[in-house]
Image (cartoon, rainbow, N blue to C red):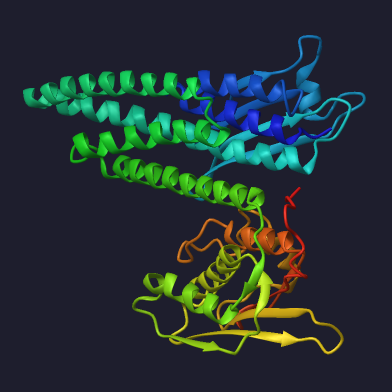
Length: 403
């Protein structure tokens, strides 16, 4: 059986703490393998690629009563179980592979997806450890060349101790007030980013160019994960917020939504086509969030157009009083086969970094529409734009929660 939501959050929290607790990658990976073996899989082995393409096993965890773990992992046992190989990706390459086996049953899609996420974090942890080692070697070379570097290193060590004490105090305070899972995930990210910034600030000029680029990429990656957590918190907030429906002037909502996005539109040629919209029954704050997210999405994915054309309109049904609103753009569009994936949290169909975002905006829109008793769908053609449609039901979704 796949892990429940609470077990999943506990597993993610534990994995995050393990991967941020030490710069000794082999020890860290062994602890991670033992965590995985006790939760989402029975057998877990982690191998890293070495020069020449060879693989070195650095961590293995499996039940004590398993006699021949090698035959299980190779799939050559008399009654073989499915073997899953999860790559450890980094910067377009692969650092190694994680082998998982659940004895007597297959792993669920949810658990495999979570294992892939942990594999990415593990790769980042390994790369961070290698980067730290490279930085230490560079610091040793510089220290031997100038006495003032030794002084700077001493000062750095004092600052690290002071900040470690402050971090420990902060951690004790967090335990007293029983921080939520989101805060537990933020702590290791802040530590990684903090040490990265310290390396850049104090020893940036002394680091080899490659090592400096690694540190900058590491810092940028942690900030990106923080943005993802912000998105998760926004999604959770939307899901629990009590609905306050009232008669809303949708035209005014759209106007205020565009004003909110003025900074995002600066320097762009954007033609906004605003059709007249009927009033509707909805929560005004949540409805504004819907239009802000849909318009922001349209602005983002028309960034490659000399003149972006974004239209907001309404389709009136001849058979009922249902109102269908839409936001249409002439941007990059999407494959119609991927329509359902658009509204999954943190799922981005366009991974090009020129398109900013965390992949949670449309899932928030879907949650709000569902809270109102409505529905949302999209139509798109690759290279020819996209249109997002939504209804709001009759506004009777008060006090509903997203499952």
